[in-house]
Image (cartoon, rainbow, N blue to C red):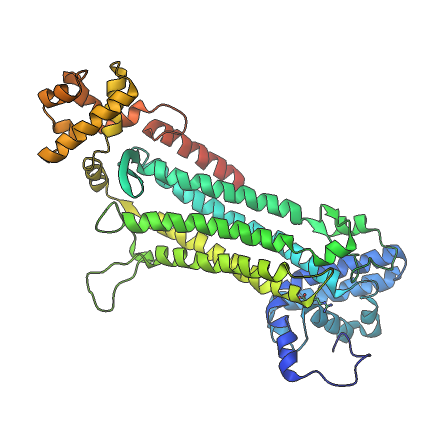
Length: 461
Ligand code: ARG
């Protein structure tokens, strides 16, 4: 059944018909379309445009359809209708006859699809939040296990200062926590009910839109009908939340791909998230991390592609807006898969404590700490920096680490140095001395990891 036709003599070209149809992807909105339709039937009863009996017959028929679809949604997926709204209406008419044709009074597919999609988003974000939480938990567990495992920290990909594996993991927990808060924020803004806005000008029925919004579980009704049917900010926002989160995941993968390389050798990924080479028998490749890094590009593509579509549109509804769904569905599904695969990689990883520690002993990662030790002996920081720079040069020439310089060399370049200064370069001491909030100190990292684990398990409960 076509939803329109009275005005037309000719038939739609099959090529354009296929081009125009959205059922191949918007069938996923069936739950939401049924919920919106039930609420609209009830709103019409309250407005006096349907009798109570008509309303309850429509609601019962929509419930019946819901039970059928819950068992097997292929009947929606494979149907010939133009979109999910046409599908639901046609099945309703099949079921209750002429009464089914009364439901669409005062409603348009324009306010209907905007409502469906917002309802879908509200349901979808719950699962995404769970996936974010699980990944954060896996990282916090790793941080708790490896709170004290010393490893090199980098800037410019050059060895910089000693940190711990746990500290590195918690950096990503912070990023993912911001992703969660952005997701919650976007969800709050999209929690607005467009139904009752009609095609663009507002419904002709005397609908109580506040009651309708409440019935559908929305925070409030939309305030301007033109805006309501054309607003897809929420699609762009969710795609941005996904894109930025994928950027975080990609940076994480970039770090770990290096950590897993033989050049670093800090960690080994499990067999469950790695693959071999068809030619080189020795290879164990971090494909999981590489694909998470690669797939983030798609999500960003969905965001920029959809923004490019949106920016050109005059008010109010334009068919271009039908492009919102594939962008949103694919973008969020890709993000979700990336979160899940990253979690598997984190759960499978084993850090090599000796390799991490050994790497801390090469590359003068303790130079800043030596300057700090001189400062504690009264040397102004700028002078200490200069002296340690010269000590590093001397050490490079002798091909030794700073802690291996003899006391005479130390004293010649840094007169404040004493016999005990080399003990200050002990890794455990270096880490312990950092006591400021947020620093790479095993005790602080452990405490933060435990705080995260408590907070995350409360959220899940
Ligand atoms: N399939 C359409 C979409 O996804 C539904 C709205 C159609 N509205 C219209 N006036 N043609 O946007």
